[in-house]
Length: 182
Image 1: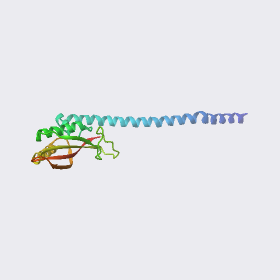
Image 2 (image 1 turned 60 degrees about the horizontal axis):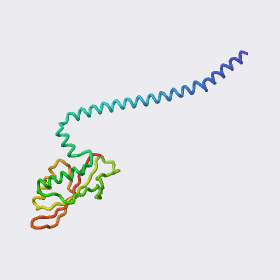
Image 3 (image 1 turned 90 degrees about the vertical axis):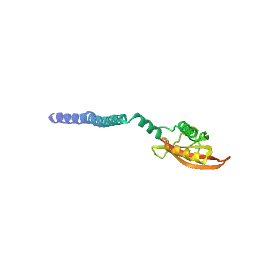
Image 4 (image 1 turned 135 degrees about the horizontal axis):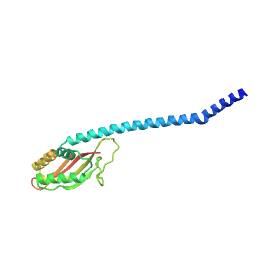
């Protein structure tokens, strides 16, 4: 009877281990792993919060005028209408004429409906083109190009073509490219 009792307790211990202790231990290990992942995520979130606060503090140090100039230099969006308005303003101011046939172009030189350019190149900026024409004298056109260069908006003149018009005037066709942050 003594041996039967010992076998019973050994069998009960093995059964308790198989059916209760081992599954409970596995559950505890799973919960500990989940707790560790959550703790790491919480630590990362705290680091990101600190970094965000530092960036906010750094941004508050920048003068609003400088921030506006920086936003105009490299805007956060395409802003193709703003670009056309800026170019028209410069043309009216410098050569006293309006631009003709303004057409927004994509990065590949193809016209887009809304100016949006979707690229999978991984760049942190996008580019968009603007094609327009203007009729003026050569000297005024050079002043117009210098005014575009001095403008706060970052533009690259990528193509210029011209043909003779009446008198001292020429028909200039200009293609320029500007950039924005994605």
